[in-house]
Image (cartoon, rainbow, N blue to C red; front, side, top):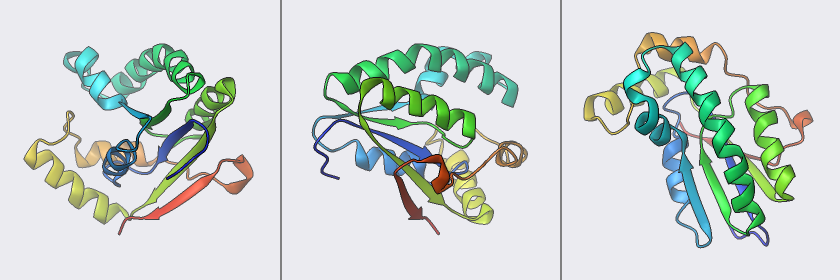
Length: 164
């Protein structure tokens, strides 16, 4: 993962596709920090989040604060692993604004995993309590409806990961 300049690492993949696992590995590199959106959301708003609409609302509030911070870290020469979802065009456009504002490099890691693999991992994650949020299968399907894989036409430096 050697880069000559600070890099924003972003992730696209369904719930339980392995985004956080990969983020944790990437964050081990020197000069790199990880910002885990779910950790911040749970710590700040966990007691107020029970629906998908709650997630969207509070995620928007959090991103309003984190965006300038992420850009500032990149400008300071620190690579950032942003453990969040870049699953929609709007989310990816927002993330693009962060690395462009900083004049930084980027990688969009795309984790391709079938629903049945994600659902099996989700059940395990829910059972062992390793994630701050318990996500139901119904919520998985609800969020998956909004999942839009990136295309090369969007202009991101894509890194493809098959997680089956």
